[in-house]
Every structure is written in structure tokens, then in C-alpha cells.
Length: 469
Image (cartoon, rainbow, N blue to C red; front, side, top):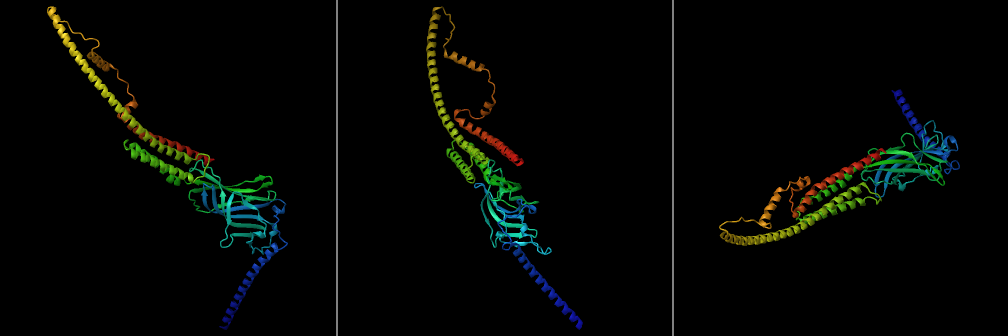
């Protein structure tokens, strides 16, 4: 029994000793890390102003490999032609002056938070408008030094970058926004930027943009030559496709509805002047307001955009419907005046014909009475023989008979399709306005449908061409 207690006491003491040794080893390991930092970055041992040597210690340019992690894309502004992005930016290069002993693999890397302690590439974003670092709660930056002298620099930054846009196909367009990184002072003889092998650009999953979709991104090189030398440059091209559903609901469908509403005036009575005028003016002002609202959200460019063609044609159709009523009103008033004049002329001709017929009847009665008296006298003188009566060539009754015969002998005219279709409507002068309304009911929708066919086929085909290119 006593030997058992003795065994457990020895085991407990050994455990305490091992834990104490482990703690001492851990503390000594951190102390060793401090000693390594003091050894490689001590005063007079490392100069951050001198760039690292080239590959394998040669005098060639320092090679810096870069990779990005796009955390979010906040806004893409059409009117300012810019976009905002938040990313984690990483640079990695080799500085042989920073090599150290890893203590048999136990010291994987050293971590620094002060970038000015080591040499840093003078990289800048050439198309940057604004930018800032993140310092909540601590500065989001670190530097890792590996045993072989490799240095990894990582920082989280937010940038507002310029993005020149071509809006000819707006809102059926695709835009390419670039992220350019270049050396400011070191030429390619001293510093060269390269993309990290494998996957140099990463994008966060489930990236949602309000009016765009990130289709793909491409990495490329964009070295620039100036009077002071050639500078290394890298770029990332982000291809954004504009979401058309938003514009279909907010612009295209309302414009179509306004155009169709303007056609309602063709079905109203031509005498309803207040209703037709108010409908035409209201749709015209609404369409003009819609157009100005669209242009307010876009930059003033010198070329014509696809949305300009659409709104311009819709505005023309609405304005044409208002002009059509003006033409109908003019034709109605002109037809009524002509109808009144025609009625007056018909009444005058009727009075003249009645007067002429009365005069002819009185002359005929006088002639018949004189002829009867002459026949009786001649009959008495000639022994009872009677001569037949012969009408004179200027007799109005004979002229009327001849005209009737000419009317019945006229050849039938060949039927005309247009005249046959128009004959279904009243043919008097006062109904010409009604005929204009009927023609407009068919012409306006047909022309608008033809415009839609040409518009969508043209711009969708051009969009496919840009996509293949």
C-alpha cells in the first residue's frame, strides 16, 4: 500500500517537471524569435533603402510576385465612370539578407507589423482616384519573413478606380474595368512585377452587384515606357455585364405603355377636344420627364446611346399622336366649311333649276297655245288637214332625255382595292377626319412594331458581336 502511494507521488512530480520544461522551452522559443529579428534587422546589419539582389544573388532586377483577393465590389458609377473595390493585396519577393536559422523547422516565419523595417516595392495603382487603409481595430497589414529570405507583404485596402466606359449600347452593354499596378520609381532594370503562378486573382464567392454581373476577369501585363525609362506594370480586367431586367421594368415597359396610351385618342370622338388634347399633352410631358430622368443618371457623351434611340422614337410617336389630332381637327373644320358651302351651292342650283323649269313650263304653255291656235286656223284654211308637231333642237325636255341616255350608256369603271376599303367609311367631306383616325389606328401600331423588330435585332446582334470579340 505504501509502495503505491510512492509510485503516484513520483508520477505527479515527473508530470510537473515535464510541464515546466515545456513552458521553459516555449518561452525560450519566443526569445529565440526575438533574437533572430534583432540579428537580421539590427542596427548596421540591414539597410531598407537598398533593394534586394536578383535571382540567385545576381545583379539582375528584383522579382516581385503579386496576387489579389477581391473581397467586394461596392459601386459602379456610370455618371462618374468609376468603381469601388475592397481587396486584400499581397506581394512576395526574396531578400537574401533576411535569411535565418529556422531551428530545425520549429520557426516557420517571423511576423512584422512595421513595413518600414524592410525594403518595400514602390508599387502604386495608376488608375486610382481615392483609396484608404483599414485601421480597425489594428492596422490590417502584416509582413512575414521566411527562413529562406522570402518576404510576404499583405494589406487590406479600399480603392475607387477610374473605369472609362463606352455607352453606345447602354443599357445592353458590357464594360471592362481595369485595376492597374505599376512601379513608380524603379525601372525594369531594378524591379519587375510578375503575377503569382497558379491563381493570381481570387474573387469572393456569392459576389452580388445591384445592376451588374461579374462575368470573368483576365490578368495581363501593361509595361509603360516614358522618357525616364520602362516601368513594370500589371493589370486585371474585370468584365461586367449590365443586368437588363432592371431597365426593362423601369424604362422600356413604361415607355411602351405611354406610347400605347397616346393611341387611345384615335378611338375617341373627334368632337371630344378637351379629352384628346389633355391625353396627348399629358403623355408627351410624361415621356419628356422620363427621358430627362434617364439622361440625368448618365454622363453627357457626344455619341448616341441605345437608350437615346428608344426614348427618342417613343417621344416621336407620342408627339405624332398629338399632331394627328391637330390634323383631324383641321380636317373636321375644313370639311364642315366645305359641306356648308356645298349645301349652299346645292340650294342655289336647286333654286335655279326650279326657276328654269318654271320658265320653261310657262314658255311651253305659251307655245302650245299659239300652236293650237295656228293649227286650228290652218285646219280651217286647208280643208281640215293637220300637220304633225316637231320639237325644236333647243327644247329642254329633249336635252334631259338625252342626258339620261348618256348616263345609262357609260361603261362601268374598274374596281380599286383602296377605294373599295375606304368606301366602307362615309365619303362626304365632313367625314375625312374620321378616315384619318381609322388609318392612324392601324398605321401607328404597325410602324411601332416594325421599329421594335429593327431595334432589338440590331442592338442584340451588336451585343453578341462584342461578346465574341
